[in-house]
Image (tube, rainbow, N blue to C red; front, top):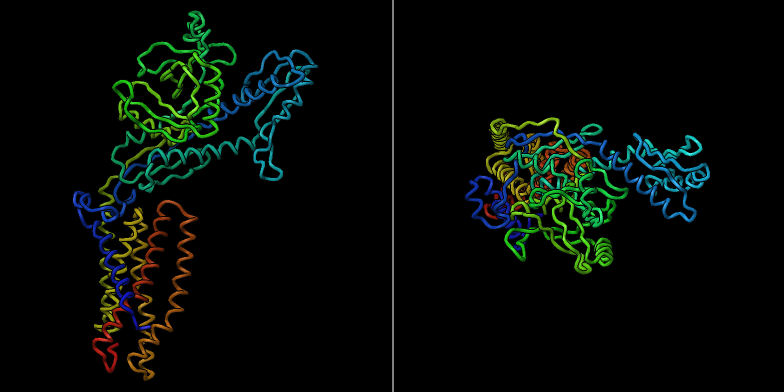
Length: 543
């Protein structure tokens, strides 16, 4: 137990030295950190309660999602009627309140349509046995059929919308994943957002408010060149069934708009990647994009069938460009031009990579946390940590003498340095509960040394030589030390996966502290003890 080969000694002191290098940036200024290489320039991120930042409560507009779901159902119904061998004749199929009303021309047509509508209703979750269906069909009269979205489907849509919104917000606001955002559902239709250290609140708002809905539509050339149809579309928005009207974006430099086909399979969900770049033919910038395999095939098929026609690139219900299709575009990539600067193209590519928000988000509560409050918390944490360290150090000296007390205190100091190094390396965020976790670790870290030293003292009282007493003390203390720390680690892991926000911060610091305390007490302190024992070779132990 007390023999250390040169390679082990080198590895132990190397780990401590590496930890010291990783912890040093936390006491340096930002300018000094920038001059340090790679991982050695990282420091601990401070949470919202320590460095200030933005706190927002966002409300999800679920009504727009349900409206879109009804529109999608209506499109599916029309498609089913068109594809039917014995096609039922309709007077209209329209959204009527929170349902879809299909009025057929005759009772016979309604009889044909009813099984088609019932066949469109699918299980919400096909993998789940006994899952409810997406829609419910009822017959109100001989000719009227009504399709309603079931309550279970509405609840499923609500949960999916909240989850997707959280994912999109995380990718938009923290694309590199190092800000340690707090993003969590709050009630049935709200999302809690906390951004530690946020400097530009308006930039966060802009990223939230932009929906970044991208789609590619074929232009209805006939109606788009018809002055009367365009005038009606511009003034009232009314177009022929299956078409829709979008205006040109202001940045495109064009007035008016175009009538395009409403239905499209090429949307922002098809994007595999997008990036900003210089325009290949003029000044300005473009947004390069590439599709996934399925959409690349579909896009190639669409362009091959519509050569010498135009397709409109629509972003947030505005046309940014409408190029002419000169040949089939089969590579699954291209670029979007629309009067972008490099900065605006970069922002757009970031939003497109993050994905479109499934619903509009409204900021219902907003506040900023003053960094001075966090400074007070840091100051209080430093004072508490200092008092804790000093108290533990004095206790160890008084209880186990100068030599063994110093060994325990060196192990404890090394433990704190290694905790800071691990938090810096992983880019973890330290919150006020995290500081509490570190202070708790200070008390727990010395617990292993107490167990070891008490066992050594007991073996000394039993008449064993110093070498045998220390050897036996470390050997017999290993099992209770591991038992105690493993059970605490289980609690920390549970807190991490069950909790969120500051609770996770506490769990992270506690878990890291447990690992480091075992290393410093069982390995590092043992090396220091063995080194002292070989050098002094005492006949009695001063413990």
